[in-house]
Image: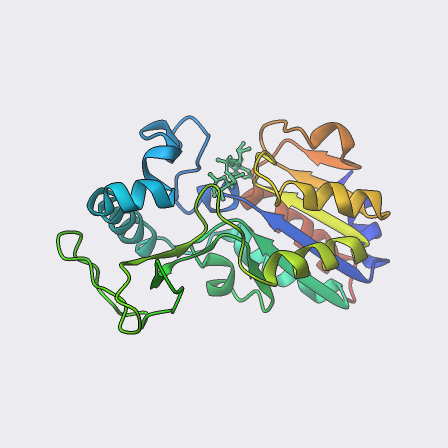
Length: 246
Ligand code: APR
């Protein structure tokens, strides 16, 4: 199956990858819904919503500071590096991620669309003005926006919020053009991200899924690998290298 996929990749022009928390699991970043998932300890409504932030900004910042500290220690894994290299076999190649950990860019992926924002960035909760990256946040003294006085919050998309202007439109546009669409490490449950593989398939893309567990996408995928991304993606790159050219 992997050989056939490698041959298919060599004939393709545009590749798109959608990643979720699973691609970072092997870096030690807990997923949201897996057994050790982040949500296991909290209900999303408690923390990742504007309502939760307005009601209890201190606990929301404590959670994000904990996640920043945890993520600050992790490095890209072999799956991130393999996805960065996979772009060499396509004329057009985009990584669309639901992750906020910045690991795709750290691994060298040149074109990354961050659908759900980036946990290391801060913005104003009122006017969305981005603050300097090195701004430390003390949950007991949350800084306010220099422009409008609004409370500073993480620049991530919370439940019920719209995705960043332009980013989701660009993600749909590349998915519609894709010759091959990879869904890697996502439960494919949260929309609009979960619509991207479906749109790609409807526009004629070959759909590839890499996930140790089945998801709602599995039955539609042309290639579905019950595998960890950190193992399977380097194997695919090795095959492509052995077949030469790119
Ligand atoms: N390799 C590939 N996939 C893996 C691995 C691995 N090593 N380990 C776990 N997975 C899979 C799990 O089987 C699961 O299907 O990764 C998926 C992670 O799914 P979720 O925890 O639901 O994370 P994700 O799909 O990214 O969630 C989407 O939901 O809570 C919101 O904003 C949050 O961006 C997140 C969105």
